[in-house]
Image (tube, rainbow, N blue to C red; front, side):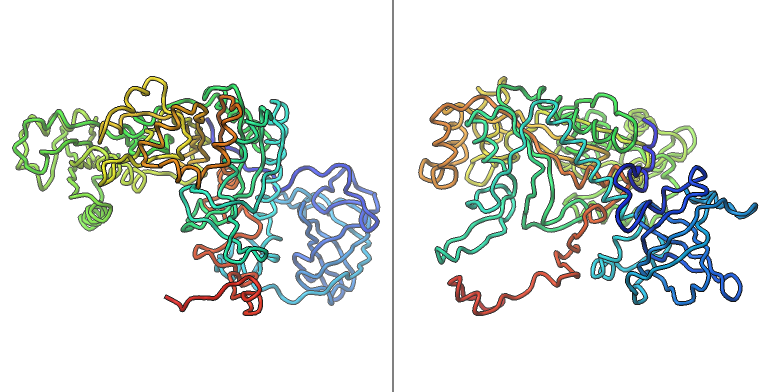
Length: 594
């Protein structure tokens, strides 16, 4: 797919532009409007003096900028809010600005009404100046005036609208679920809210509407969806905030393939609404294949450098470091030019990530491999390594030997470190990853560690494997699935367990007794007693989808009022201490700082 086009700065203005204060918006005027008398409202973007009394004022609103020729504008300053009334005319010959949508026209014979004065903004509003993020967020109301932020938030609105259209067309019903709920295990820490009515008791803010949407299925809703606000108390990063929005969906009497179809249609509708191009059908890859080829369960398939199996090549090696369960390698095209310091840095990174070390090989003429370990390897091993990795002169080969999961993890991270292109390059590459393991590890007590919530249905072909024990249980697949875009996990879902016998087997394997199950999931289990249909669902992050559609590396740039990396809000000062009287009313007392 070709690189996705830049979204428009704003949706096209149609009906509704005119109000009692203005007739048009700044960025919508053109040659067809010449001769019209119009009233515009906006902010003074720039002032340029022209002689003693005349000035060119660039007037800005969310649709764009238009040049206004104003007599006696010496009192107008940057970011003043004004109303300008005048006549649209063509710009004089030689003064057309091809970089502006309104660059062929200007507003003349202008009268100005100052609606609000303004102090100089805390930072320039052009996109060329780098501004400290904390300063930007502390004055987010100013930052939002930038064309980039206007584009991002308006594109987000277009995405939400397209998602709703698609889900409703597919028979889904929009239902709001509660924000104050009981604390349930969802994998991250809950944000909790103390109860004034019942001192010592707490509500939790939902990490997702998971249990409530399943209850909707028991209630016969059949197809539910919600653009839901979710909250998780976990460390922040480029694709994660405390608060986030997701499309949440659940359907009855469906398979995993049906869910893929529903969600693919909604995402494709959103992409087409923004880019004008509907993506092709989303390919499907198993979790096992993704880990073997890319070392990641959210593979970025825009570039090569795939992991290549080399275990058989070194099956009889005399090199002790390669006597391991698994050996894989990646080829870095042109990487032989990396200096020794950089290679040492990569080796240190591998060790910091939990590996024992890294073997590097520079590829010379005739596929000759130069490496500190070459003397410990046979000519046949070196030749086979070059052949398997399809090495060319000037390439760099990176090899890791360890446990299979460790090798996949380390080379997967190296692949991204050395080859991942910027988020805006290579187009939009969607991918369904399916058949995740049901369990991710086995604990010291011999019990499996769940990879998902305990209501995830095992793969039907693997039900007999639930009778196994220890690491044999790691072969059990789940009916769970993720949607990936350019190496970002957009979201995940699964077919749910609705049969009591299977649910009891999973609880027993996880060591969840009847008392604990009732304490954590009692209201859902009770509902299942009264007839639960087979059902499955999915949720994906709207913040992440919009960020990738507009080419942002951080979801903070598509959220109106986000938190910083530390979780702070420089605008409001949150989080802040609570008044002691309020604490007393809630029956709370603060412990000494740790």
